[in-house]
Image 1 (cartoon, rainbow, N blue to C red):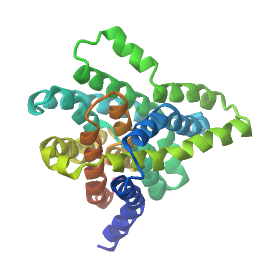
Image 2 (spheres, rainbow, N blue to C red):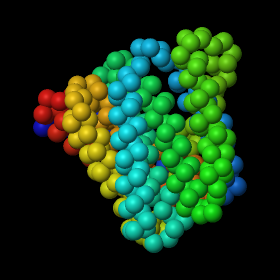
Image 3 (cartoon, rainbow, N blue to C red):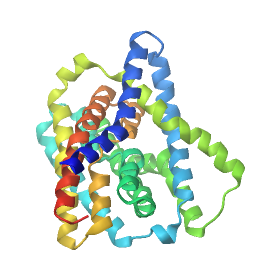
Length: 316
């Protein structure tokens, strides 16, 4: 029981600050300090500059050889595609509004690995957890963004050509940032201090600005109207996806730190970047924000229970 409360306390320490900033965004919007124009500009700044900078700086500093775990990344990619396909099938049948289907699918499969996931792994395994999770984060994030562009493009622009989807993927700032960082990590290039520090300034904008904009967009009256879709995405994110990753990982033989990374990365709440992408592409940003808020709150419990079960079984 003490172990459970220790894990629960850790979960609060990771997700608590996120809720503080979300709540601050709500309050600042209500008192008029955050406007629609600010939220629009801030979201685009995060999507086009701050988040790509965060991923580039993080991945470029990772030791590629030390972090490389081909089997773990390959399984993560396969499990991600599997959950994506299932959620596309479910959304086509259970989400009435076609334009909202991509938002539900993205909210269901896209995890907040870069913020909450890495924090979980470091807390559980220290430096070895950070090394094991970093490259996994970089490569799976590319897949996340590709699949997010595909599902949002399909639901928001039903007649968009394959070339248009590929163009959207190729010009996505987040994907560009990751792709540029991979050869730097692979070659072990040490970037100049000026580049690192300048990029870090932009990277540091990411979480607080993204969450402020998310909080400012929360509409609790609309949350009641969006209950079905919000709950559908949240159950998928916090129950279905972790089950696929953990049970699939067990089936192929992952144990210890590898299984722990799969559990911790897949059980995180919906990524803050999912709101930014939905808003930038003209989708239902309120629904995206509600999914983030609900999964962030509920993940405190679901992640703790998942860790207790897997650790109690001696598997991580």
